Image: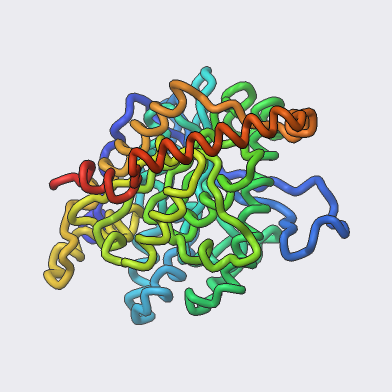
Length: 405
């Protein structure tokens, strides 16, 4: 019945089979005066998608781990209760293309940390995350507990509901972004520990020696794109690059007390729907153009796509949305996921072929005044060079890279 009403997930495009495993990682650092409560998170919940060795006894994972996740999505969509109950029941038994708690392949893989958008969670980007994993990445999808998730499982198994606040309440969004940064940093700490010592549990996959923490990528959709850009603005960030899926840039532009200056190259993959939003489009353009690696950054838009084509929502509902003739964005959702993943993987592999060596705080403290002046001169030369080439990373790349579907 669920296959007739909710469409099946398409086959993964990479060479690897994929497993998934949920991890709750507790913060080992106590709350103190240097760690304000609004920026402190007790733990972080994430789902790892990874290349896996599948055995006969392994089973495909359910798409939604609890019916309440699906009910929360239906509430945000303002569906009637009877329809919400029916759809959430179907969603909770819908099978994916990856396997729950399968063993990780005996190999070290680059890492991607994924941040969801408003109304998302760690589950509903399973298509893009698992497809990236099938190409040889370990993807950690965070479930944010800042009130931006449609529903989130709390540290003590309580439900954290969606804060239905208007998007443009910037003070509230900035508070959420600070919390998201804390969760992402805790996620990095957890992955460092897991890479060295594995998970202290007799049940589940062994990740010891499987995560290449020297090759880490930050990614996010919509508000998760804003989270990604904020993380990449740290001069000492450990990420090699960023993946921006329909980034919502305006919360960053409105952060008067913080200068957003990305220190890593990014690829911004815009849906056609989002590229028609002038204010946000111009904000993304400005942030990329002012970034350190603007000459290595790319922006492209995918014709026929809507904002939710980068999540699972339109994928599983494609039997329903095919009759919605009001929408001009009618690309096959499975094709949209393939295009997003292909663009992201191509970009990551290009950057990782010549990796960036992160600047450490210790190295910076040893830098002499003369070398600082030399660095300043190099920066001015780079800016003059970029200006002389009239490089416009969004307009130029969008015109050249727009995919005709």
